Length: 245
Image (cartoon, rainbow, N blue to C red; front, side, top):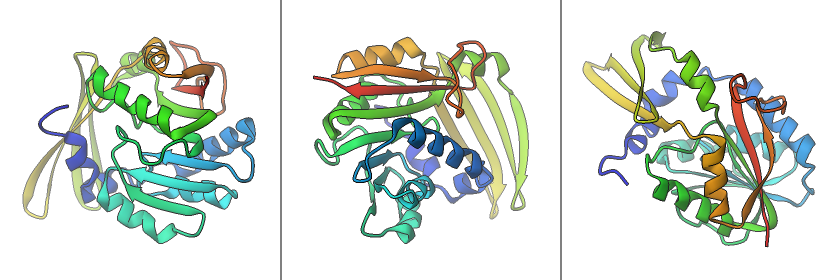
């Protein structure tokens, strides 16, 4: 693990939420609805939303009738999510590399590229070990990730986004098999520079991570419509893995 954990600073920053406030939540709910229709969870299924952010998707799952726990490393995000809590929806600050509740969940959702931040196979594997321990027998992990091949071929290197009176200057590059995004801007009389970095992990990388556990890949999709995964064309890499004996 790095000495400086970029994700701790950036994800907990109010400016992170300003930059990404216009994310398409309709698309996210559409994806989750498609997953639920495909998986057909029992009404009493307990779902873990791992890296839940501000909890909007946990809330949506809960509104569909499921018991949901949302976990995220960002204390600010969880503070925001707490407004949604009820008897069947709970939130907590938690590091995905460690176990929160042993053999508790029928499903664990890790959505919208919330993996691959650590730049270390050892740390990535810790996440999968923790997921394995938290899933019940025959439980299912849904891991939604970027499609590395598509990202490489369509990378937008420079971009300026203006939001709430802030001009975010964004630069993207590929460095040592990582997409590295630098975000620079001025706000409240100060200059800020943040970093995002996500590994360009491929399907076989995830299969190797799974094979070190009792998780086994059972389905692969390439879009939020749950269409076939095509390495050079698909927008997403969506993996479903089952905890087997």
